[in-house]
Length: 438
Image 1 (spheres, rainbow, N blue to C red):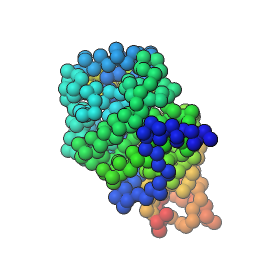
Image 2: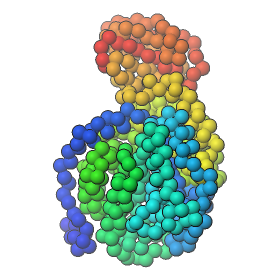
Image 3: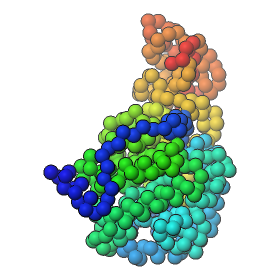
Image 4: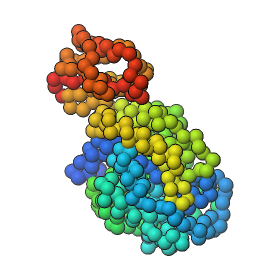
């Protein structure tokens, strides 16, 4: 009864309602999924006019800022030190294979030139430059793949209706034209997929704002299936991910886990089952997504490298976040960590890029990754000796850092490896080469 009532209301509002389609990804899409799984490391950027307040990207919600007053932040937004090429070169040097950047966050301000609303970085700010356009050009020149974050919810538009559980203290009217808002989103998505060249993925966020609605009713409420079809029609190779913290819906190509490695739920948003889709974990360098002037609690470079390794050991990508300052610069703490990660990946990237989760599951000592005939044992907690299962005797066992051959024995499906004394590396990587592909 409840589901029927919801669908009836949506039809009365003029919203397109579809049954769950039999989504069949194209060959181009499947190849893009495979390439995405091979990338293993990306950079996430949360940047908008909220950076001017230095209190994170949720400041409008947290401080109950009036939507009309908040909009005046755009009047003073002038990131005089923003240099897209510097950003992209730093990300590339860090070993990242793609960049995911916020095009429009929950505050509703668009960081690209859009015909759908004057509330954007080109038309509403003295800066007057298309941030996304400059980033797209730099990514194309430097060979970095570009993904777009896009918010489903909006705390500022008056046609955003019915309301969800956030943004209710901003002074917005209590009613509006929901179908108008859905058309607005489709217009912006069309712009993003036709103006800036190849887009690797659309990274949706915000469906959880109406999580009082049953899981199976969310696609109809948000018009997800037609929206997904639009994206796949405009760019068949563009992957779709949705940070709704639930089992993926039909038409989604990657599964997102927020602040948790798949299979863990320390942050409380990742209790969903792990699908067979490509996986991605997004995580912050400090404690904030958007720039927060008081947040200097950065994770160490060593901890971030370990987190990257553990994520790869689960067969997932790590999307590591940075919140740029309002002047367009990246915090020095973030750049230092990017440099350290890049140096590590330049030496040991073969054990991360193009791998899948190793057949040896996570242990107290670390994790494993594998590709072709190679099994990489990532020893994050030193052991003098490792004993792992193996179906055959390996051809060789070496320490990746030095190329040193390690003594080993194989008997009755058990491989015993003598590691010896600790090397002092963040991750002691043992490479086991077998005669046949794993």
